[in-house]
Image 1 (tube, rainbow, N blue to C red):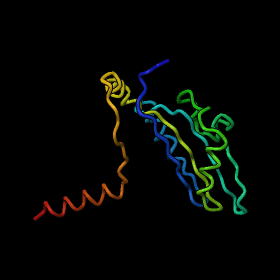
Image 2: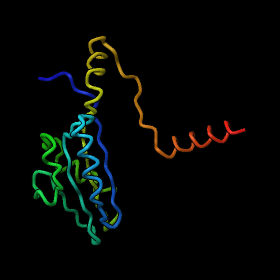
Image 3: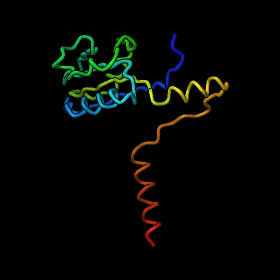
Length: 145
């Protein structure tokens, strides 16, 4: 078993009106190709106008539908139907979502060093973009005068 694994994260990205834009796939592929991340699993959920839910694993998608992302690593098998249905519960009707699980490959060596030193993560949070942007704007406004 490979113990040199970086932190693993997941995200559920909603697309109102089922409008998924293709520019996401090349940006994600670039992260994989640069070995910044390793995709562990990727699936899609859709809630129709009547509330019915459809789930699709990347393995079940055709190459055209998947946009070539399946070529970027050994993807699949971690998310199950229950995970996808839980993600779909938060969707409004006529919306879809991508559920992505990835390893932060860039941090694998650091994470292993922390484990070797018996380090323990006490807190780990992602700071929302809006909060960072507000802080940057605040700092810029206060440094102008």
